[in-house]
Length: 399
Image (tube, rainbow, N blue to C red; front, side, top):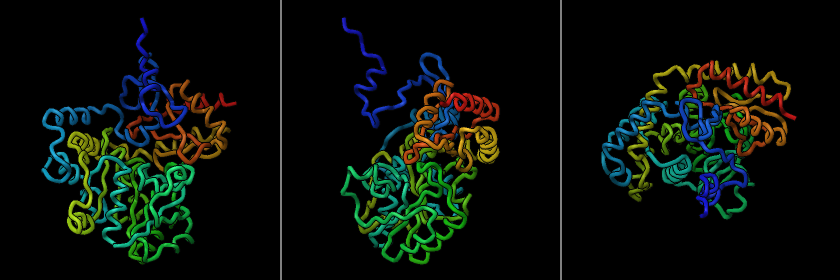
């Protein structure tokens, strides 16, 4: 009698793969900052699902909200037709905490969809066709988002893409002069995450804001990774003192559930309503269960001291891990950090060594020489000290 394939075998046989070498570890349970395998091995999560699990795994308030909303109702109707309390409450709480009068929120399913919708809205509002993005930016992998992905290695196989795209160099003040009255928008990450955590040069984001204002170009901030406390403020725009016209949100927005959004002033968002009506349509965007989870997660973030503590925790990481002789530098803000090793070979080794030590980390999409330290914001100092010891052990074992 033929043995039933294992879960691992079924994973490789039936789940579509995105790379030839996935991490391939099975997780049975997750709680707080820890992941547990079926065999009982415990891992510290230094990825947070790529900046998703900011309040930690299985946060009781979030789990309770999911269960209660699932008991009440799940999907009712396509987006925007029926008043659904979780949507309204989350939109209202976001509006209370977003700067610059961005009080209108449109919910979608993901960060990619949020960015696609933001591009559409900018073109609709301005009547212009050109879009500027930045080299080594990541805004998603759908067709429109891929068009503004700032790395040709990931785009070249899928051309032709959207026309009228201009890629600028991040932190290049000179390149800002390329923005003129033909551009509908400039889309930027306030901090470039997948480039290996590249922070904005002093004055760069204010200069970008001024150039957009002077040319009537809408500024879109993609805060999919930087939002919800990861940099030490609720949103990166607060840290850098620059308010965009449109902000896109996802990842931590849903508290572990799939949810995206764009937010802006009502006078911009109202453009969806006419010429044509239904300017953006989504069936599952703003799913009530996801919004309930997002609402509970945001309330936790606003109540706990974790956002204010992110800087202190980052300083500890820099002090302890940054002193190791194999570490070239540590880049980033708050608990979105890149530990630079200087070589791809060292990076491949360290990911495996960290797994052996019980630490889950990974690399960045456009940077193959640095590993990620972005744990759930709820990580305690005791847990952080434990994690740093494990990371140092792995660094000591590097060949």
